[in-house]
Image (cartoon, rainbow, N blue to C red; front, side, top):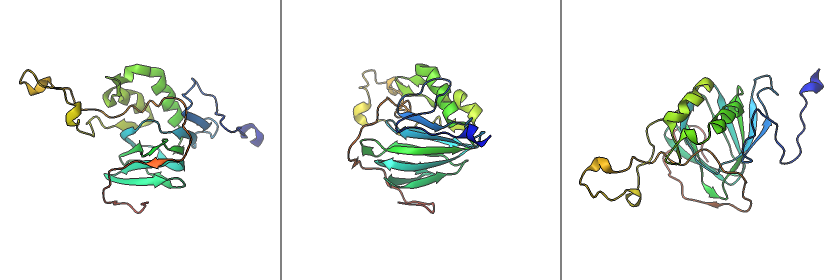
Amino acid sequence: MADERFVLLAPGAARPGRIPLPPAFRVKATTADTDGRFSLLEVVLERDIPRHTHHRADEGVYVLDGVLEIEFDDAVHLAPRGSFVLLPHGVPHALRRASDPPPRVLQISAPGGWELYLEDLFEAGPTVLTDGRLDPAKINPIAAPYAIVYEETPQDEQTPEDEPADTTGDASAARPRSLGRSALAPAGPARGQPSVRAGRRQPGRGKWQV
């Protein structure tokens, strides 16, 4: 019956899953709710999501609050409140916070499965981290069943102040370059008027641009 699939959530509520997700990830419609067609989450992007590719699912993101930085196919865009972006499968992209408080977004994935991947990811806990950072080499086996691949090449060079002093004369003694912020977001969205931080601007190559 149609009413068996009807879902009405109170403000701030989330659909239950196999394991609880942090409050920064509120599942509004599960893959099971939609018979696999899509999944819908409200997300506070406390941490940057590293560059990765969905090989199966298209992803849509609507910005509710704050400013979201989107890297898509080597071009960078800023998406303020009220913006929407469609990220087709097969193209590398990354999502970053570009405001403080961080952006709050609605994220839809079609077909579904995104929340199932997040459950597996958070269940793995610190085993996917190296030196406190998300390690693509460790996360890719978890992401593989969902046709998601994270780039294992670091995106950003370490800044000079992050580089340890070389007291041996051996360049190999320096720390590896940073893998970027962890995508494992802490709980609790902040509220208030966002202040836009400077983003890296590159010429846009797609049809959509803020």
